[in-house]
Image 1 (cartoon, one colour):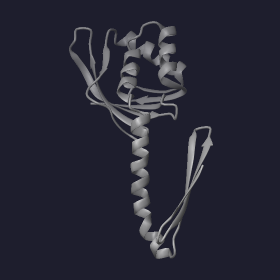
Image 2: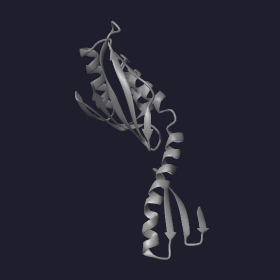
Image 3: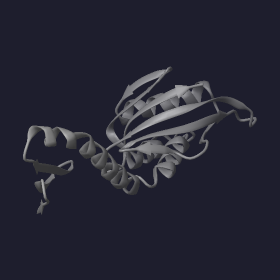
Image 4: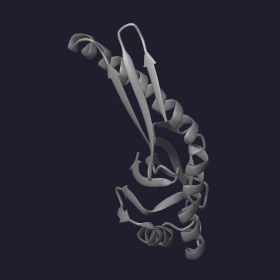
Length: 175
């Protein structure tokens, strides 16, 4: 798809190309002088950020619910169901980092979750507040409660999302 715009000082072409990871947008903005061109740079940065945020806000509108599903998996005792639940919310190559783990892939994370259940039985991980996100990256606050309902910790996760909306990377920060 090609769109052409011609203004008093500018002519441009926008080309959209389907690729495996989504769409490549190519912009060609023709201006009469280097000075006029250079004056447009920050305007384009701003406009492209606004566009990216509008698209990402729509594409990732359910990030809070996705985080809820991810947190609930940490309480799933059945390893087969836990793996299926992980596959539903995350890519196979999910990288998970926090002060207590460094895992790569769903099998590695599944084993880590099993170990955390063994050493911290009955804890519940839950989202606290609304997810905040920008262009495919979200910050989600959480808390951990023990089986007695008392707080055991809190922190934030940084979720990086894959083009299909599943989780590609998580970094957990305690405290």
